[in-house]
Length: 353
Ligand code: UDP
Image 1: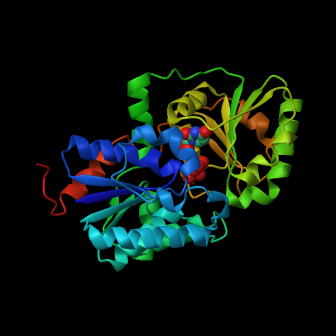
Image 2: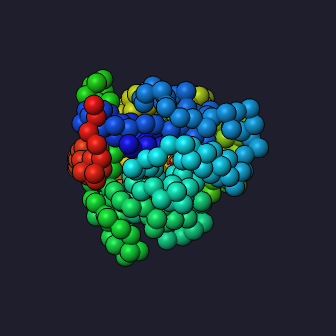
């Protein structure tokens, strides 16, 4: 039996193609929602079946009091209870969240095999992104199977001595393709729309400056229409009044289909999100990366991404110039989930009845 585990929006987005592929290939599995990000769960929960297991009650009503360590402890103790009563051949975790790191460790202590999806991303800077760089490094070392999205990620895993590394691509490309096939989203070639997301912990302390910078972008480029689906984190929300220009729209977080529609409708994107950098490559959109470093150098290599730190305004002219050529996403070919499930199913698991 496979357990597919997730606790946040990006994990659900990157794991729903794996869940669909498990169903398609008839492999037995259960799902777990840890409840780490209950406030964004509603927007994406329909991408996956209702979870077989949930720790959400451990998080209800007091989310604002959850420090990183507090979330980690809650997930660990609930996982220990779950793993005492249920055995799994694999615990599949995705990325670098507290959910992924905590579950991987408790699974490891229970002698369950951990399968890490999107393994090997590194900046080699423990502060950037924090705590994700530490989380994914730990998971990579204890995982029984590591699914690397790109050759660079594979190389990092090899250098770290990680076990059973498979280069499969990133499931985000599968996710985009599934939504595209179902909804045929038109990709704008000429647009004045700019999509923005900002939420990273490293940016919380300078969020007021970043919002001020965005306001300047709006004032100096009145031809642009900026839209920011604002993250529910209070460290982000408390600065929203800085976005006063009339051509900035602040909206609630949106579901995944609407998000991809907004990416496709954009001239370019401004973000500190990891997943959005990958999605931009699927739609051939330039992306201003509001970070000091990225674990996704592939987006820089194909000429669609630019690391700007906090200097958004100075890079708007670059972003306004359309990409020189149409690129093929460097993050995968849309068949990552198929490969992942074949490898997991080939690991001595019984077929579904
Ligand atoms: N996303 C979404 N709705 C929103 C904002 C983001 O569906 O209102 C999606 C986005 O397309 C991407 C993912 O959420 O796939 C990114 O999540 P986040 O920025 O929280 O995490 P990261 O990608 O940095 O791990």
